Length: 238
Image (tube, rainbow, N blue to C red; front, side):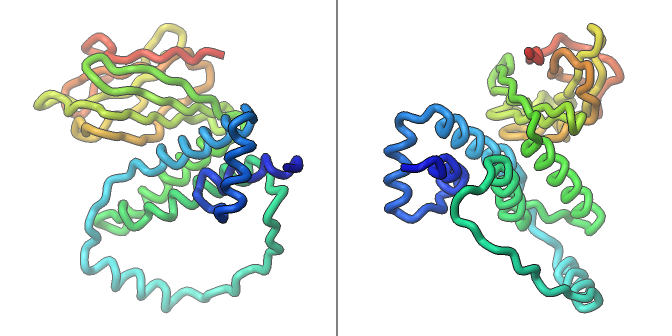
């Protein structure tokens, strides 16, 4: 194995290696902590971005898309040389994020075109945070069940929260996200209608200067300040 073997972590995590290279890489992986960390990161990226909920598109949406296609001038695809090896690690992370976002695009089609555009913006924001070179990951648990994973980027001044195995919120209640700034909790968004299961959401608050993340149960629609004790607190340790 030469030094280029490290660049295979991305395609390995995406199941894109032929059998012979996969077997050789797995033999290398068993003793390479760097590649083990890379593979874990790529797979975690795919898991986070795969959290969208499927929704059946309305019949009118297909006609609207086809109309836009007929009216939009198509450019020829650029010719880009393909290199099998030596691909930078960060490039593969961006590629992994893009593949998962595009692969899940059909499952998050919105009821209206405006909602679809908003969903695209959110997916792009999530991908930007996950692929940021300075992104950091933090983990925690939710009292009553579930786990929290946070990915924060100072360069993007944003954070993505992943709530796994989250129980349904009580009737008439919502989960609300918070950032802690100077011992003060600032709202970072509401989890829509107490959504259970898996939630992948960009947080509506700056991460600059934030010391921790909090999750509370609030009246439906959220509160300006927490009305209950946090059911999850995750410090942003450096």
